[in-house]
Image (tube, rainbow, N blue to C red):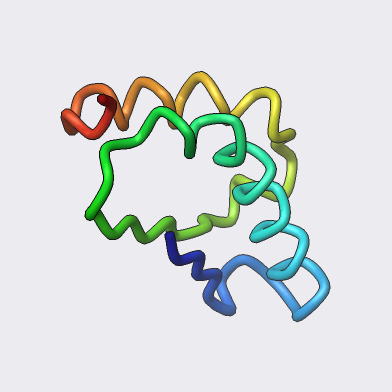
Length: 70
């Protein structure tokens, strides 16, 4: 799993926080993923106001639609 946050998210502190939020939201879902897939998550500016608990169901839904759960 790769995480990326461009300068549109904000300065270095905001980009690092965005990546931490994404990492925390994905952590419980990693065990359910099928092996041998690469995932890249791109942070968007709206993530600055989000919490990992809000993102987790959204990520779960997206991963299910992509067929990445075992």
